[in-house]
Length: 140
Length: 345
Image 1 (cartoon, chains in turn yellow, red):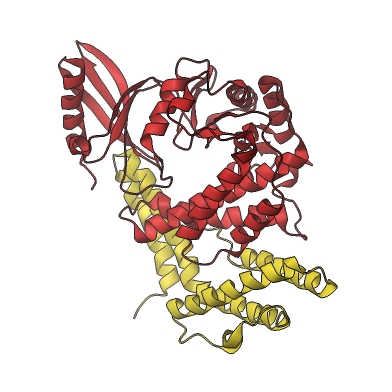
Image 2 (cartoon, chains in turn purple, orange):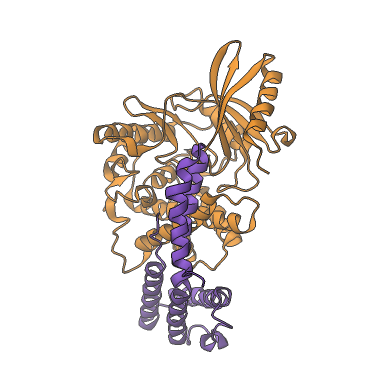
């Protein structure tokens, strides 16, 4: 039976930081090991919720791109799904949509209409939401 | 390739013997953590029966900051005779056959530290005052009188801002692993709102922040370190970088966790004889955050694709990118609370 992967990473991080590093003589190795331990915690969060966060981003970006259809034709990507729920495939669609969102952002910034301003505000709100959604707090 | 500590010690001793024509014995060597742009070692050597401390900085294959060692070493040589304290530069060696990579050697500053966490409130006040006084003093100097034009490009004052922006934009576009909508929005804003020409041309340290100077808690700053991003430019660039919210992660009120932002600016103005126009300064603050983001993006790319797998590269590209994105949003989003960046208002 495989332990829950994110929990396992967190426990191994604790093992590294609390039991193994204190016995190292080199300050350099202890400090570097602490960073590795912290990163293991951050990676544990990514393992646990990374795909879910990206799927929420993908849904939000599709909504924005559909709303901005008169400014930018994003093509079929607006209705496409990731090839699988592997992180690699989800990232690929996320990146593709983000590229289109950047182009849409440029277009609405150039427009002065009320609609464009509203969409510009929506894009900024999305960027704030996604920055909050992906916030990394695991510091050991 | 990483050299074992005893190999570094042995080869450095041989190198110094050739330079000094004396018997050199390395009595202690340790690698220093946090040398993100160079591998940094502290050595104790015995020469003619006397002990002295040295700092050896060896180029890694990849680093957080891809910089030209000749420019960095040149900055140390030019600044060393001035009232800005820096370690004494001793040797710059470009021959990679000696330690597998080029390296430089400087005198160590004994007894001084970089960790501001150890300071009490009075010491923070004192070190903070000195920190921005020194930065103001650096801004007041004429870089041409110091000879910087002999080894560094000299931009026109109206080119300082666009030149720096173009440099870091190129880094972001080349190194982004995923598309960066916040960085690109910031670049568009910066291009649309370029500041007026610099008040004067000055030496820009390039990474002036708490952690990049050595101090004794009760005896002040002993040396300003890490000049690898040094260039000539607008004096507001260093000031904005020193006040970026990234450097006071856990202390929103105090720039660099030392002094209130407005107090730091007042001290800098007094010391430099220059003025901070807050409208113009806003551009440099947004730029500082973008430059930080560029460095973290670049470190991620180095970690993923480069030879170096230092944890600090991944950490910078992970936590720092995350934080710097939120700082840029706080600067630029129409709905931002200015919780992170509003301390000058």
